[in-house]
Amino acid sequence: MVKKSWGFATLAVHGSGGHDPATGAVSPPIYQSSTFAFHDSQHGADLFSGAAEGYIYSRILNPTTQALEQEIALLEKGDEAVVFGSGMAAITNTIITLCNSGDNFVSSRTIYGGTHALYLKVMPRINVGVTEVDATDLNKIEDAIDDKTRFLFIETPANPTIEIMDIKACAEIAHRKGIKLVVDNTFATPYLQNPLKLGADLVIHSATKYIGGHGDTVAGIVVGPTDIMTEMRKGVAQDIGAILSPFNAWLLLRGLKTLPVRMDRHCKNAMRIAQFLAFHPRVEKVWYPGLRTHPQHDLAAAQMSNFGGMIAFDIKGGLEEGKRMIDALELCTIAVSLGDCDTLVVHPASTIHSTYSPEDREAAGIKDNMIRLSVGIEAVEDIIEDLTLGLKKM
Image 1 (tube, rainbow, N blue to C red):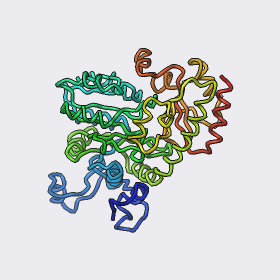
Image 2: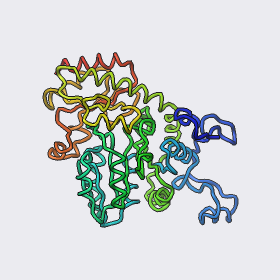
Image 3: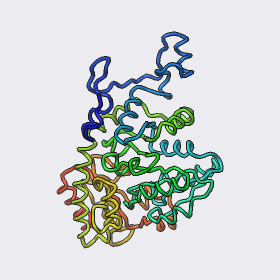
Image 4: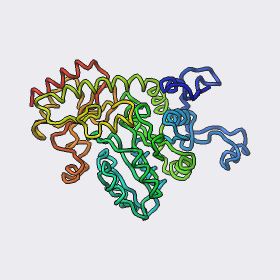
């Protein structure tokens, strides 16, 4: 029995429904089956017509993935969730659910490079327009919306600049214009930020990151109201088929149990490291919302319960100095992705945001001398020692 009065950490451990009613298993079972037997031919017909509830085929619904959907909807304070095989699949299915050919949407311009690539490569092929704007400027959002716009998409904190968008203000603009607000909540997680409570209509996660937390699975999640989730599941997702496997759903259910503990450590370590970098003579600028020097520090403090585990910093120098710096690291891992227990470091301009043209990167604030750090849960003194070593090699 789930109690709404339970705190987040309790819900993260117990919120998926408790023990398996059939066996008493404390860990939810992995239903590693592609198909499910009908009692008889009429039962099969009833399941397909909707006259009966149950499982038919794992592309349509699976007990393990359903348990994950129920858990994440609970933690995000939404009606329902739909899970996918990747974060990009979650974004693609959201766009196709909300837009028809000839429609458009408005997006914040500083976003994950894969999302930007989707806009450039795929949206023109399905005749859906995209306008990217500086979403920290509310007037630019308003100006970009027209009668064909179906939703506003923002990513906050933004990848990789850690910009903060005002979710409540964006929701007010979107609803006044008669469109939806979609928020990518990957960096914050439902533990640090609840966009639906601030007025957003849909929340997206690359669950590969903090929700999984261990770098061992790829997944995506969308959370929202029942009507949109039903349309997404039955009208789009089942036919596209970018589903999540039962085993990966089980890994995410396991990851959710430790999400609050891990996020507390990520945040604590990140604050210490941001303070260290802010006073280092070879660092030009640190982008971390927990620092009072961050331009949206007050906004982050208002809409987040803590400031997350992601840091961006500009080193003194250019591309080659940045490469020398990260190549000298011994503890931190040079790798894409984020949200792992390990500290991961990457040079955005040459890797994850190489999908941007140089002009678009400049407009989005992604400099050649920017380093992105996904702070892990190691001993913070060891991470700082490793960064000190790297900065000396510049």
